[in-house]
Length: 241
Image 1 (cartoon, rainbow, N blue to C red):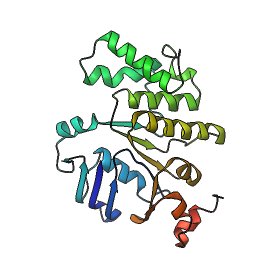
Image 2 (cartoon, one colour; image 1 turned 45 degrees about the vertical axis):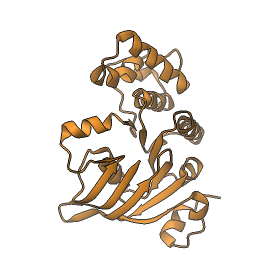
Image 3 (cartoon, rainbow, N blue to C red; image 1 turned 30 degrees about the vertical axis):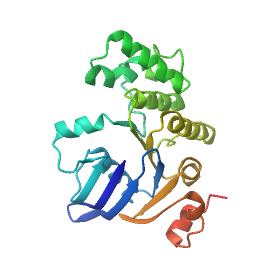
Image 4 (cartoon, rainbow, N blue to C red; image 1 turned 90 degrees about the vertical axis):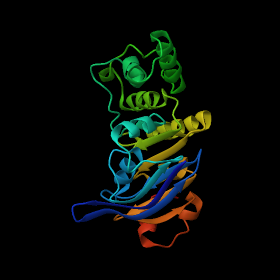
């Protein structure tokens, strides 16, 4: 589904990512972990096509996106859903209008078809009956769910999550983790989750990839990660039983 081949990204003279090679399989959930400034968010933005690599190739299915213009990348992005760190809902729109936004902008669906799709996706994330509410009437956890409903409204092949548990308490973090797992199972999507939360990564992911100072230092299952003796990896597992 996604192939990152010899990718480096420089901002001026600073190397944010150095010769990254990574493949993400169709239907897999991959968690990308790392500390602040490690390069994990840069890698996410590269996969979405928001920025371009300085070197290397990024493949989404059979399409190499690093050389595409904005119109071409926009078409590829229709395969993708994005759940932002702070939900990124439009405050002036209702919940239903937020979920419908991409459908209105990029499809020829009728108003009734859009209304049905919005209702279906809100139900899927456990938010029936909230379509007419405004974002400021929602809790942080509910906003995350609305953001996910918007991401899956297009019925994408890939969902990207940017720090989905950021700012949430442990109970709500568990609920968001369960939602990520259930969404992947229900839709058979490929999921890429950028997180600093090692506990969450172990719970949701088939594999974990760790970025450290721009280098990809390990890719493996959660169980195997716990056995890695590299002190940089072990530090991330201090809070994991």
